[in-house]
Length: 249
Image (cartoon, rainbow, N blue to C red; front, side, top):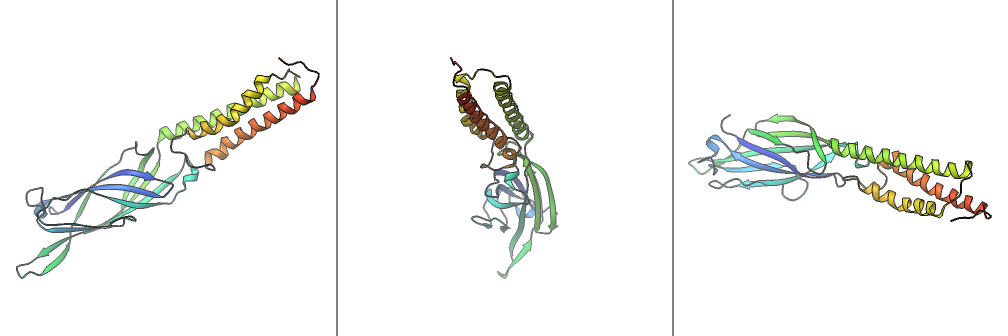
């Protein structure tokens, strides 16, 4: 229909911890719904499934439709699966025009909706992998949005995982060399392992938009690296205590 409302939608914020997605919607009246391609020729009401703030937006005749923001729930995913977590969000929209006849009686008319989605992968390290219309009727639309971490976030997290394992292997080789090959225990080795215990959590938190302790990447690498480093420091201390006659520099 040439007489419709064009809704330009753009994701502005994603919070996987709270399970919220914020979308900016910019309506634009077309055809007979607009007086001069700017102002409305009829009163327009837009209903949304926003979970915070307003979910009903009214625009008066003779005025311009201003953009508004809605917050919708995210589901079907867990942030603790970082960096491979995937989520979905559902946006429902219902648009009506209030038509007033010559007798002053008003009637509600469902307005066709045309949607334009603009998704940018730079928003909070997420990208949209799908956007499909689940239900489409005159005046009503239901859109399912699928999101996941960007490739850059995944690649950097994988780099940190590999780095943790390389550090763990280096610690194991150093401890094995001291115990098996009977190498002298240097005091600098204590400082090295002690510093690593505090440096590993800082490196872990460098990963972009990583949640609190206990996500998937922690179980894959961080907990192992921290445990190997702590165990290596304890073994080095015990080895040093067993060699009281050894001179150290």
